[in-house]
Image 1 (cartoon, one colour):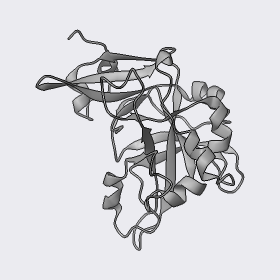
Image 2 (cartoon, rainbow, N blue to C red; image 1 turned 90 degrees about the horizontal axis):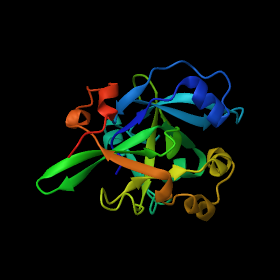
Image 3 (tube, rainbow, N blue to C red; image 1 turned 90 degrees about the vertical axis):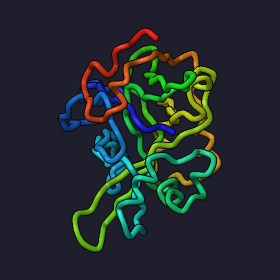
Image 4 (cartoon, rainbow, N blue to C red; image 1 turned 180 degrees about the vertical axis):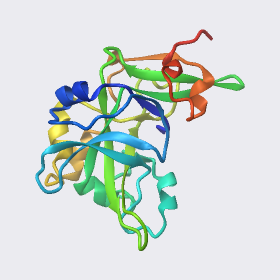
Length: 224
């Protein structure tokens, strides 16, 4: 699964890399956890223009009666995302890019779990394949929520964890964000493991275990 990640790129960097005009201001995030706000890109439902938006992590299907289901929907498996009731509608029409600069996993080492940071060797931001939904409860405020799609691990990730988030290549952005494109098999073909040779991983401290620790120190490498 993917249960924690970072997004430390500036609005200007994201605007340039993802072709976004006039992005809103935001601060770096070093330890993003489920139920928190994430930086995402979608095609505006009315204009189809790319927009940078903030979505709550933990997808709540439009038909849900209770927001609690979001805690169970932080990730969607690439293998079943097109069929699962919670995700199939969003997979067809409401896909997004979740912007990240790294993600975290916990590697089992004997009797302990060692947190690891994983990201591009270039340290550039990248796009995680996401889905979004608009949820309107019977009473109270509506919510725009999202999930991150995971897939089989690549060679770098296999010793660390059994899953990894789908990192989309820039060539896939247009198709992925286009709500009019609904061909399941070509879309699922995009949900593959990212090449190991473009990624790096290193151990970090257990500061990341607590989501309240949202500071640069979380990213610092440690000796093990």
